[in-house]
Length: 131
Length: 183
Image 1 (cartoon, rainbow over the protein chains, first blue to last red):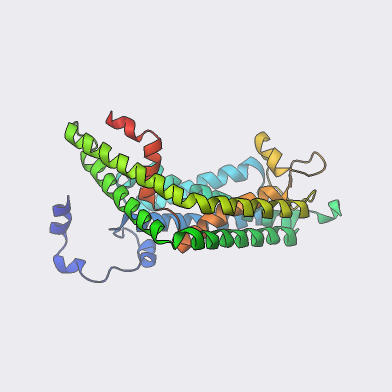
Image 2: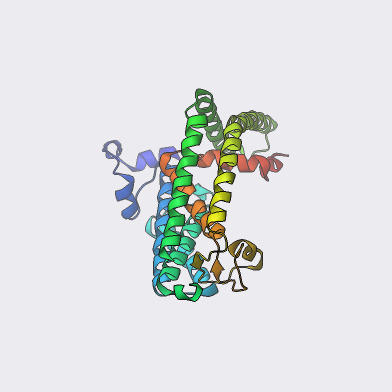
């Protein structure tokens, strides 16, 4: 397998400085020699997405089971699309699609709930009711 | 309502930082921990690689080697847990005291309004010590736990204290389905 990759690319193409994880994360089909680095990108993207969706859900405001289900679908969907279509990574290298889908999911879900609850209760909840 | 919720987020950031700070003083900076951690990480990666290459092979020799390495990793993991345990107890006591203090401050106070109805078995937590039967009301403890779940892990990851994926993967497989595949 190694021989395949080295024979494909000319040797001097590998020596230039590998661009930072940030720029590679934003460019499609980037190469990820370090698996951990790619998983970190997925992790932090998920955290940002969780907080962002929490803010949007709170502002709309979305309520009930619909909000929770939509979060799960969008969160998993975006990350899956990012891995399989944008970056074109081989899921098997990372232990299957499930491993990528669950990377950082619970933390992201908790972050989402916190922002959703805070924005929703801050904007739409009648404080006077309990005063 | 903003004041309460933001205060809880602030409290949970502070406690997460305090917890990590204490663990750093008592565990992370010690030479024994660093040595063991490096060892466990090296072994986990090696084992993962070996499993990838020889995992499906029926060769007895490879199986035996993998089993031996798993055993060694298990022992090192146990030592690592022992090193951590002392500080975990100390932090556990300190946090229980802190939590009961915050609990009494926020006792009976609705700190937020939930945009969803929590499941039955979560309602005991989300409605803890609150008056009335409106289960959309959120108690301090529920919001605090959610904040901690998200903030603590992110802080650990930012500071580089979170266990690496290879270690947790091997750790899970040691106590999960992993060894069965070699039998």
